[in-house]
Image 1 (tube, rainbow, N blue to C red):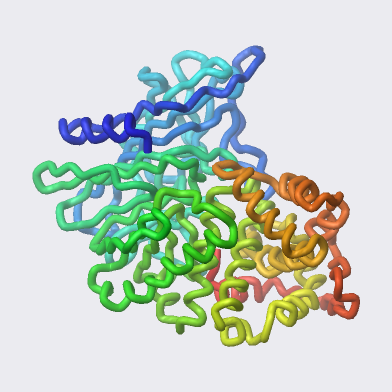
Image 2: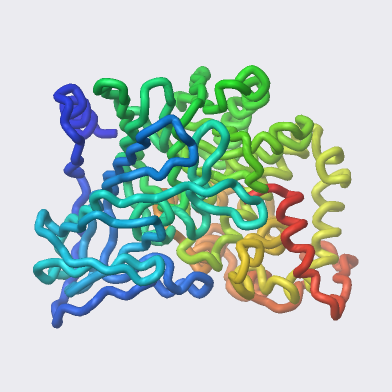
Amino acid sequence: MSDLIEKRLSGLLAAGATAVVVVAGLAAPAYAGGGAASPGSAGLGDRLYPLLGNGGYDVQDYNLKIRYPQKDPKQQITGDVTITAVATQNLSRFDLDFGGDGVGKVSVNGKPARFSRDGDELIVTPAHHLAKGKRFWVTVSGFTATPIPANADSPAGFVTTPDGTIMAGQPDQSHQLFPSNDHPRDMATYTISMTRPSGWAAVANGVHVGDRTSGTTVTSVYRETKPMASELIQLAVGAFTVHERPAVGGVPIRDVVPTRLAADLLPKAEVEREQLAWMVNKVGKYPFERYGSLVIDADLGFALETQTLSLYDTGLFSYPKFVLDPIMNHELAHMWFGDSVAPYEWSNVWQSEGHATWYELTYALEHGQFEDYTGYTDLESYFKNVYSKGDQYRKDYGPVAHPLRSDSIWDVFNPNVYDGGALVLYALRTKIGVKKFESLERAWVSTYRGKSASTDDFIALASKVSGQNLRGFLGAWLYGTTTPPMPGHPDWTVTPPTAASAKASAKASALARTLR
């Protein structure tokens, strides 16, 4: 955080004021052209989630304030959000994604705006048209939302647990809590304020700016200065303990667990310090201000890479070390692959999950856990087995970079983006050599740090770093309906797909891996 922002927030908190952040250093993009004002699109046109996100503007910053009236994890919350954005067209009206309970009022640039709701679309009509290339502010005041129980069969965004509430927004659920442009293509910075009864903890992404006590309530403010996709937001409020660990390479570590379970859970998370050093050695500088783990007492059915604070449930933390450690490294790897470099569209999710799976497996191999964890002795034998399933995966789920459908979350987060994505990386490393592959990995996370990137971006960078035209090679691996020959392994064979679909086993496979 810049000193200017930190001092401004600290001053406002000390004065007892409600912090409204004017974002410094965010230059408005230059958008040329004019034309008549028209509505922004109700969706960014994502192939898998057509109505997710919205057109006509680019969010720069969120100032989100949430109020928790009682010590009741099931309670309805109220909130306000001010969104700083730049119009990318002349706008007559625009949409926000919001699936919560209700909205109090909306203003644009300080003036009341008309609004209506259509499903998860909050349609805002400002008093005056918004000019292309100009920054504007929209404030949604008095919105309400109610958390729902964790459910591994149907993961949801705003989740209640016995100890408090948390967020699990991937891929399309963060707008169940707050109005947003809920697509990873539109990353932004965040200020998050949480007001709750004294005695409850409140933790969010980024850096803790400060607390303000007013009577029997406490407001905590966090600032995420690095661009973040809305699906990665985290607000953990409740009977939690926040445990600070020694920094690793200058990166502070904090863990958040239910207070009643702290003695059991906290020792198991200690491995993240060693893992952070291991990942930095593999791919370069950690991209955020801090790291840590959030463990909740619920059945999520997955772990999730909420930015700077990976989310796990107690079921995962009951696994033996040779299972838990690789899973934790998978989520840590997402800080580079999926968080700092976000998918441009959800068809690109293999970039996140394939890379995280690669470093999950490599970590297990280098730490003597691989055979116990996978049942195979080395990467070659593991990927030979994955390769044999390649055509079945492509038949049931679609090509690695082109999932067939999004009827269920498990259609998108399917085995072919996890193991299939990691198999693509194995093939690529075999094709271009270990040194160039390692250079590519570092180049990917540095070139696109803080940005959304596409599969085409990955193919272009891989070609540049390797000095080879890899468009045909990677195109076949990522978009082909059949599995290409594995370089260096002419003896590897693919089992013909069966007529019976394996889709029924997709959820079981995903839950067994418990990774997102």
